[in-house]
Amino acid sequence: MARCARTKTQVAIIGGGPSGLLLSQLLNRAGVETVVLERAARDHVLSRIRAGVLEAGTTDMLREAGVADRMAQDGIAHGGCYLADDDLMVRINFRELTGTAVTVYGQTEVTADLYAAQDAIGATILHGVEDVAIQGADSSAPCVSSTRRGMVAGMDDPAGNGAGHGPRAGRGPGAYPPDPADRHTRVIVTSCICAIFPATAAPGQSKPATPPAHRS
Image (cartoon, rainbow, N blue to C red; front, side, top):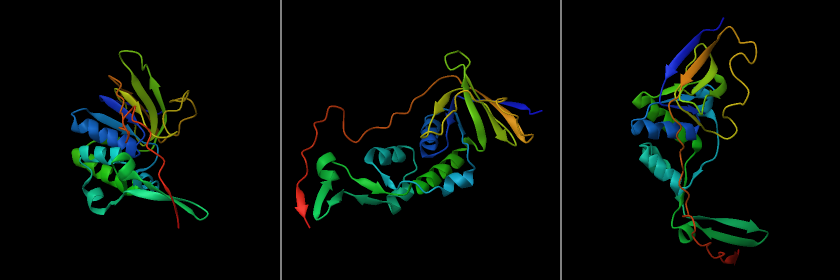
């Protein structure tokens, strides 16, 4: 029969992609303890090839998190782009319209930088975690339960991250015959925290004029 391990922390972050790792990094730097729960293996997360353009709000946040050194060295700033339609070329000038540029720097590299920073501060990241379920979120003793190959963990405050890879409603330990190698994990959570990523344009800002069209 699978054993049940319990871990207590201030914030449990479900999803160990760039968003979850960045949230963990920011919270730990602010003195808030976290545990990150990630379904995939670390090698798999580090090998995923995803988007490669970062907006100004993201680069600012990476600097705040202390993980922007390689981005500053290897990233490429772009002040605009072209949209093409047959022989019509429309230049979208980011700097002129928003006052900022975007940075070309792969998400895979961002993830590697975040892992290195998390390792340096001794943050807890658990991989191979399945069947995550948040329990008692509106109570004084919330927790996150899950199963994990080899061992399991538990936490005190859930924050879901990732696009479509968060907790699965109705699932949890016992929802299917557990593998003998699995262990049940319970995380006790104490509070709920939301991360707000700043947008490039401020709320209420007037819509910029349509950029001029150019013929190639």
